[in-house]
Length: 465
Image 1 (cartoon, rainbow, N blue to C red):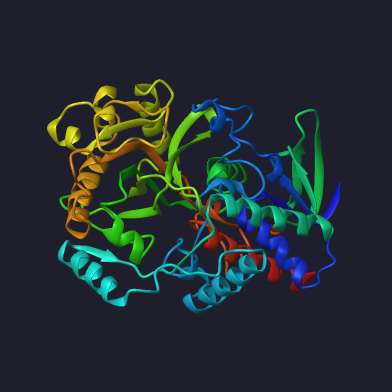
Image 2 (cartoon, rainbow, N blue to C red):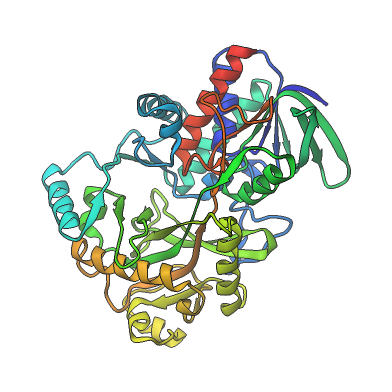
């Protein structure tokens, strides 16, 4: 098969690359290769079974058109200060301009016009004051909340738009490798699980998301693509009653708090806050179960969940942060018999495990129905665990009740975007014709920054085409 542009991965970065090519009037033949299914064919059976069925050959939550975005809470962070390190590569002004542009595209496809975090200035000042007193930094970031069910509809509209305008999307196809000739990328080898075939293209765009970060890292090592190990995030998903988070939920919707707690002073941050949301499970390769969270626009729970993530960097002699995080996840899964583990914060401080009957007696009822009560400290590295404990205690000053005995901590929460591919400002890698985008590239974190990176890639390719 021949194409002008082949895009591996139909997540936000790949989607917006194709969208921008079309918007610029490009007549180049665009082929997208997606391991999962179209958005209308992505279905998680857990809604009926109340337990993870460990779907094969991939998890429908993480794989398919729009990636994990289709089943996420659908929050679009509208500030360049949130979403990764792309602004350090392209500049803050261009990053913010492109975020604003991508946001308008989401609006065109039906995103809610309301922006969270711009109202209640006096309350915002009070939250910031308390954060400063607790030794934390509050990052200003307006949020456009699509909601899980609305995100699904928006990405369905984008999928149909791409197909109606000539973009060929190969669902159920997995990229096996790159086609190289004298350090020039000439396309990709693809499998439909029956046979392998080649797609030749002038430009190959790899945008496989967090789900494909490990795969891309191995590809970089195999083909000597210039890269450096970056950061991996290890943490927990915290769940409290809505009453505890009432002010922060109303004023900010999502609190972006960052700290460097003693004694290690590693960066620790909150991420993906879901007011009235639900804790969820995602399955990665090798049956690795990780925790996440989402929130619907209309359907609400009695709880709010958010992640607390501790950043880890490695260099010498060990430089495989993704492998390190996977081992932490595997050990936690082993303690929970392949599922997600939960423990009450008070039990952690008391040095005891949590029992299922204790969860049933608590004010906070887990929103993940098949979670297993136990001891997350038996698997969490000491350094990460101490960072998390000290950060939660600092959060308690900003949000009184956050560090209550019954606060639930789910594990493992892992974010795989550690492999930092070296590129210039046009996203050219050390291999001519190869470009790497989105979370798997190590430059972005989240829907909006990945979308913005895709927009810029689409413009560059349109100029060359």
